[in-house]
Image (spheres, rainbow, N blue to C red):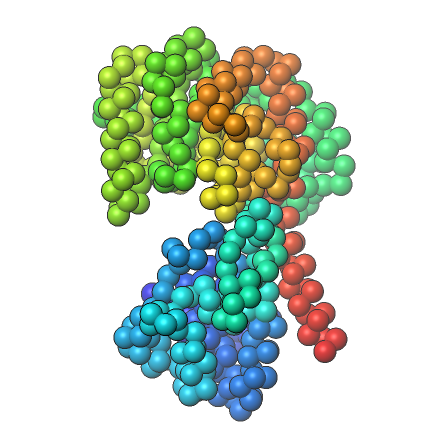
Length: 420
């Protein structure tokens, strides 16, 4: 797939007469698009170093992965069978071959860093902590372009409100003076839009089944916590279940429910076991059986439903291990109260402007869950919290802002190329 999409994708564009001014390599596996471009330039008679400089001047490598060890790689046999036949220039073949390490492995992230002129990470923290090195052993300097979200993840009623109240401009980017516009939001509007979202959510959940094969319906007057992320160890989906008795009491005392959804990777046996452990804990307590719902067939529809219909989002990645995360962004845009560790894109704003989990994280998770339930029940506190989170993070979560940031990077490259 990587070879076919890279080399084949470049050829398809060329056959259509499309010559991109810039190319964004969105993760390392698409690097062969840039290699195809380099090979094409050399094939047109451009000297290799000039062709490499030109390719770098129009190529951005965007990395989403904090740890190089988990990046894709090619062995020499794979390289000879899949890559070499697609490269016409002997110089390009030799240059790519030079990227192999002493163990005979070609790291695609290294190749992407070498063939690109600019490298970017997907949050401010990610750009600082990602440890990637080029062939010369120098650390790659990542620019920070924090991820943003598409408007399709925002409740249509909220999106309409953002545009009518001057929170968003005509490009759906934060408008000038958006903070004042957010400050003008009132609790009646917030409650009405949250109720609309709950209806949308329940319509979707009614078509799904929980861990007992039953349809799910969350009462309109219940506080709803949710975790809707990949069931990965560093995201810590089981942290709220470390003290089942305390969780059960918290849910009952606050008339609250908890929807848990997300799948472990098919090859992640430890997290499959962890999910089984959590479900067993739930099954062992009648209170949790009634109030904790696991949706196995997690997909975009379920994710969006919970985004618009839940009250409290739980985001607890190990600090330093989440590149950005976007689920929390969708939650803030839909007036959810966010409980989070200071990691990924949340840490673009420091100190973070939500219910922070730090220090004794297990204890603080329950403290923040109780606080969040009380906020949701209080008109005054909910209005203040929604305004606080939106004001702090509207620019961070904006997909339009992200696109403008990328355009700024490309424009800077164009200016540099023009001034040479």
